[in-house]
Image 1 (cartoon, rainbow, N blue to C red):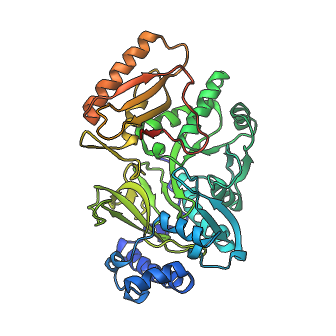
Image 2 (image 1 turned 30 degrees about the horizontal axis):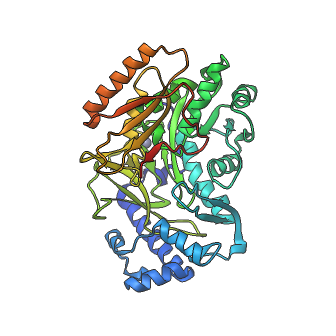
Image 3 (image 1 turned 60 degrees about the vertical axis):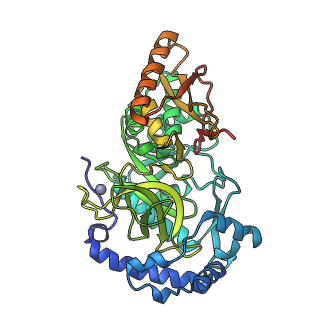
Amino acid sequence: MEQVMYRNKELETMPRRERESLQLERFRERMAYVYDRSPMYKKKYDRTGIKPSDIKTLSDISKVPFTVKEELLESQKRNPPWGEMICVPPEDGVRVFQTTGTTGTPLKVMMNKKDWTEHSYEQFMYFMNAYGIKRSDILYVPFGYGLYIAWWGFQAALEQAGVMIVPGGAQSSKDRVKNIFEWGATVICGTPTYLLHLGEVAKKMEISLADSQVAVVVAAGEPGANIASTKKAIEDTYGAKCYDDIGSSEITNFGFECVVQKGTHVNENMFYAECLDPVTLEPVEDGEVGELVLSNLCTETMPLIRYRIKDLVKFNREPCECGRSFLRLDGGILGRSDDMFQFGGVNVFPSAIENLLREVDNFSNEYQIIVPKKDSKKRIKIRVEPLSAQVSQKDMQDSVEKFIEDFKYRVTFTPTVEVVKAGGLPRFEGKAKRLIRET
Ligand SMILES: [Zn+2]
């Protein structure tokens, strides 16, 4: 195991009971803060008849109404551009972003100076230390600068901490491969999909990224970093350790993997996390799959209280070998509760299918899952492509048969598999969209 580094050992290893009193105090303070400053929260809490002073124990938090993305979007539509959840004057904003809007209208997000240079910075200092990144490291950022937050918070925080940044935006993947060697990058970040794609590009150039100086790969934006087979593929590609990084534009950065690599920690000093049954919205036991609900305990611009981020997770509060007492998400983000689908009476997670696909030789890293319309009597179709045009038809056929067998055994029904030509499936630089629901 790599050396364990902390941002703040005392805060990261404190006994759970002590942390809970800190969380209670911070939750109450944030709830009072939004109640005083945001018309959206004030109306909502007044309607429910709940006051910040009603929160006397952590279990009282369950009485506080949820916040959902639709409500934030609706508020911005009615009161453009920021909506009624903003708690600071708009002129205090120093950074704006918008969500990817893969599921509809993008949400506008703003950060004041304190959130950007202190809170977001602090969140990433937990990440940086947990990954073992030092000031002497060189971070390569292979991502275009834009409205999607992606790596810009991470980059800004690491830069502020003294890490050298190599901006790899507005370049071809080939140039990026060359850059990694030329600038001696020791850390690279990206979505699992793009990181693997870069590996494919390098291979075509007859270069192995494992020969670069990259020792740490930070992966975010998709569940991949915590899907065992995907993590292994990334680690083999770069000859480096791959760590998970979780956050979203609106809730900010809450989850990081430590060098133990057994689940993703939630920064419970800056967030309050709950794991609830997506249907009943009652808490589920640790070890059971539920929907993650998060509350910001520190931010100022638009703190979200009991925000349903729609990610499915499994809590683990057992002590971690790294010494942190922060809870862990076993397997990181298991999928989106919106992406989970029911088929043949089974709850199917696209990430489970990805894991199976990545265990099969001769398949590339790209795939699509096509879910037929309910009651159409059609089977689920998985679209795959060969790793390269050199894979023979016979080898591909054997791989498809093996995949169908594994799928039947592990997911419990039979899919159809369509093979397209090598390179025939779409590539993504940001969040991949591979689940297609027929309507
Ligand atoms: Zn740990």
